[in-house]
Length: 282
Image (cartoon, rainbow, N blue to C red; front, side, top):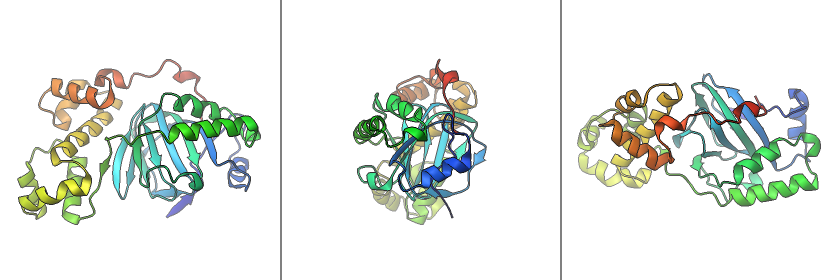
């Protein structure tokens, strides 16, 4: 298992990775470090963990975080949180643009103890972007510390977003969950899935909600919505995506998508006007 202090980050004016790595590992490194993120994702990364907690927020693209406890797609406008030392792998279909913030494990207690999606308070993004413009030469300055305090205060007001799919520990429930994640268009009913996994329908009904925190119907719908993001990010039409992930009609897909993301699927991945000006941290 690989343990990294960070992902590979590049700050403006500090492109040398060996020099930056020394600064990140130094005893006087700040407890909050932000960097702009501009990265080409190729398939699934090696499973690894960080000594610091890590936040991701994308302006453009899609990133899926795979962990032993569950999986979530990190689309634009939502914050992905990975606690310190939590095993995970990153999966992506292409280029992502946004920001990432490393949070020392001593400050992680108010945040969830498992990887989740969080709501993004309006002021959180500009604070992260401002911190990301400050090179390591500014770490520890009064201004930097004030910005970190405000960022953490806003971060602690974040709430968990319901578009996270936990994985049950019980092997047969886990098998059903993985099926719904991988192929949400599977139309088998609850009793049919139960028999397929070697459970009685009664046992599935009794244990499913307590294991994942939502009904089987809701789990299937969330899985379909998250899976649909991959098709949209790849440029497929709304109609094509709706049928592929198992919605009965395009209108029902659009309605569910708007309810979950606050936007129509056709507009969700439109790149922001200022994306070309973003600084990078590969």
